[in-house]
Length: 216
Ligand code: SF4
Image (tube, rainbow, N blue to C red; front, side, top):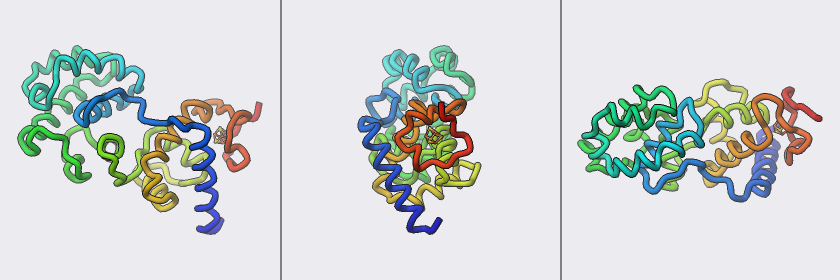
């Protein structure tokens, strides 16, 4: 496929997904950038649904980076226990909040390199915070759905999230980067499941040549 036709195909897939999922957005519930950062840290190896069950009480008790920084870590652990890996996550949240207080005046930084300095924050989390909380398109969020769909849709042949992200950034124009991941995540949840995708109902089936296709 030429570069031009790859871009045209990507554009077509984007517009069909956009028409299918006009309300696609981040599924995490949050009210400010700090809450989104913490919810995204909690979502690692968990689901947005599970995270949304623990965060209301967590955010009611801890309302600022300072309050997380000064918290009894055992209490944070207890409150986030059901999201898994709770000890590491509690430590990351508390240490990230300490840096936010000490270095950034209590406010979540808006630069990729500053976000990447925070414990528990890799590019995926940084892209979520930048894109969703600050509407800054610095990259593309590559989670497990985006990873799987990028390969199925031949947007990338890479396995590593960072390489997949680079391919997506070359294929799609910057103004689409934030919504692209929402659309792929929605499609992954709705139809393009890891096991047994529902290809018979898929709005982009004619554009997909994945060997994983299941036509029932
Ligand atoms: S045709 Fe099937 S494998 Fe391809 S994108 Fe649609 S649901 Fe996924």
